Length: 208
Ligand SMILES: Nc1nc2c(ncn2[C@@H]2O[C@H](COP(=O)(O)OP(=O)(O)OP(=O)(O)O)[C@@H](O)[C@H]2O)c(=O)[nH]1
Ligand SMILES: [Mg+2]
Image (cartoon, rainbow, N blue to C red; front, side, top):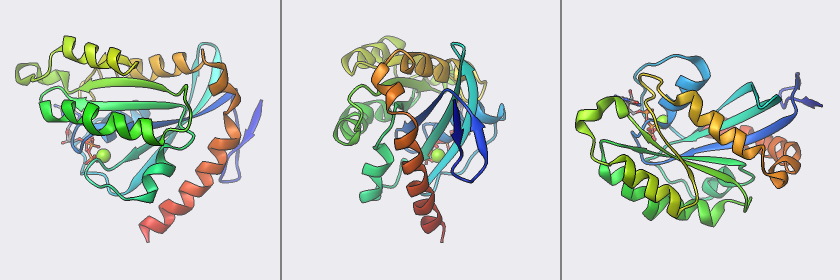
C-alpha cells in the first residue's frame, strides 16, 4: 500500500498509526521518544507546546508509519487537548518510578483525560514506569505498576530512557497489540493524515 506524506513526499507502509505520550512533567516522555527515534540519550528541557516525530519500522512483518505525539506535562492548553487525543490508535502513559505523585496522577488525571477525549474505543494503552536505572531511589514497586495497568486495561513495562532498557520493547509491544485490533487497522490513514495536517498547522501557529 502506498501513502502520501503530508509534506508532499511519498512513503510506503501497510499501516499508519497515531501514538501519544501522556504523563506529568519530567517523567521522561520526550527522552523516551528521543531514545526510541534516534538511539540518542541526552538531558532535555521541558517540552513547550506540542511536538511530534515520525518513525517507520517493520513489526510483525508489516511496514508501519508511526506518528508519535509528545506534549508538555506541565501545561494544559484547553482545546488543543481534545485534538491531541483525537484519532489516537495507541497511548503511552508514563510515570517516573522514583516519584510517587507521577504515578498517582496517572490514575487521577491522565487516565481520566484519556477516557474523556480518546475517540477510538479500542485504542491500545501501555503504562510505562520510567527511570528504572535509578533503582535505589525507587518509590513505586513493579507490582503496583502492574496492578494499575490491570485496572485500566493497559499493557505494562518498566524502562529507562537513559540506558534504553525496554525502550524499543515498549513501542514494539504497543504496535504488535494495535495490529491485532481490526478497527484500528481500518481507521488508519484518513484520520491520521487529516489530523496530521491540522496539528501541523496548529503547531506552526504555536511556534509563532
Ligand atoms: N535517570 C534517568 N533520567 C531520565 C530518564 N528519562 C528522562 N530522564 C531525565 O528526566 C528529565 C525530564 O525528562 P523529559 O524527557 O524532559 O521529561 P518530559 O516528560 O518530556 O517532561 P515535560 O516535557 O516537561 O512534560 C531530564 O533531565 C531527563 O534527562 C531515565 O530513564 N533515567
Ligand atoms: Mg517533554
